Length: 111
Image (cartoon, rainbow, N blue to C red; front, side, top):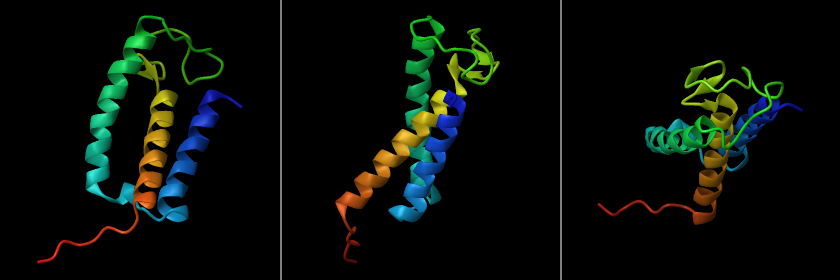
């Protein structure tokens, strides 16, 4: 299975975990998306530095685009393959959903 297919499966599984299995419904909130924008910004900085400098390389047959390292285009954003962004999304979402579920019910503040 290619890296692209694995990334797509990971995203679907993380969404299923959030929306149906754990019923945390994080992705339906603006708080989640604002938090994720912050996380993805740092992910792009870190991943971009590693892939842009050639420290981490990818087989062009396993990802969208090619082995050519570009800042934007050819299946890359800030040097990182889009698959890395998909995996990052899945990992962060799954971790947060489990965290919220293990935390238990949230008590509403008394008014």
